[in-house]
Image (cartoon, rainbow, N blue to C red; front, side, top):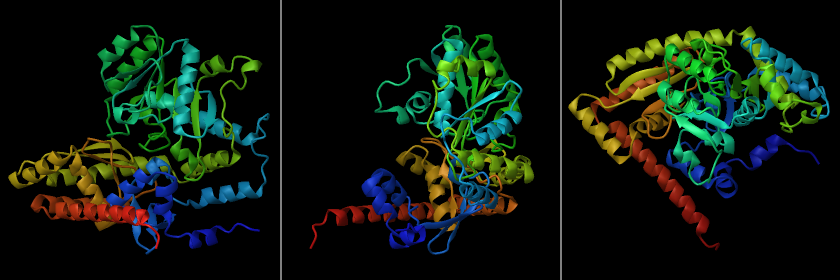
Length: 471
């Protein structure tokens, strides 16, 4: 008996949402259908997704930053085929395989001088969990400080460092000693550090939930305070790292020297989950302090050679195609074209971010008619305005975007790092047309309402049919 993927996909085509509703997450199914995002994608290539009808969608999310090199990159695919054909002796466990060592060498070489060792894992959240344990072991302290608006993952330790109460609600007591500090507030940070029990301060150099930024001087002052207090400075580069902001690490823009770095997403090449925590030899040896403790922190798939191949191939493409430099150059193109748009459209207030990580901040207009429409939308739900743009961007223009966080009027763009001026122009032209409509009349709002109503109808109809007695 053989397994044929193509046959399985053909036989079960169109059952996506029913299967998810029955076996995985019915609430997510409802959200996707309500927004009208229920498409049957059949292929992904470069910056685009394609549905069963052949319609092309510009992907401005790139799997939340996973597809830095776009979807189905030929070099990564070929590397993985080579790895499968090589019948590698994968995960022998009591072993020191070559490929993890090679990828660790590549990452250390690309990192600041204080970074000397790598712990591999499966995700960004796992890398953050490792950073918590290593910081506590190194400093012999327990508390971890984090920022408001922060997002570091949803496993229990990482969740404790989340700046949104919505994510934490319902899960009971989390990591003891996790303490929130307002983003950029030096005095509040120093107040906590003075207590003498802080192991580390974990930050995103540019926050993902809202694309919030600080000036270089602010970052340097925060880092100096942490080190003066004998605590560790952790940079979570899971989303911002590996070229996303136009530097290999986002902290490079600010001249920071983190004690621990966490990465994931882009390192996967878009194929094999992988994460890593990078730190100094001193911090590393505080955990692996003897032969008896050689496996005191571990995970089964940490040395998965397929993941290591994906990481090595990804870094090879980064070098060959000058991906970081390209992302940096496109960042200037994004800013120039979007700031020109902001000068012409009163709904678009601020452009945030660097490289290919962009935050579009929307707010109340000044003209009477547009202001009334904006207030009516916001009265229905806080920060609903940005959602009224995300939906028609998808339906009318075939552009996949997201609101940056709950209750903020910010649309976040995370295109593949290979995206060029063609993709930028597609997005800017669509947003230009949509904002022009929004400033003229309520037609775009009616379009949004109709889409939501259709989605709700589909959801209700499916619910009714699933409860109907069989004939």
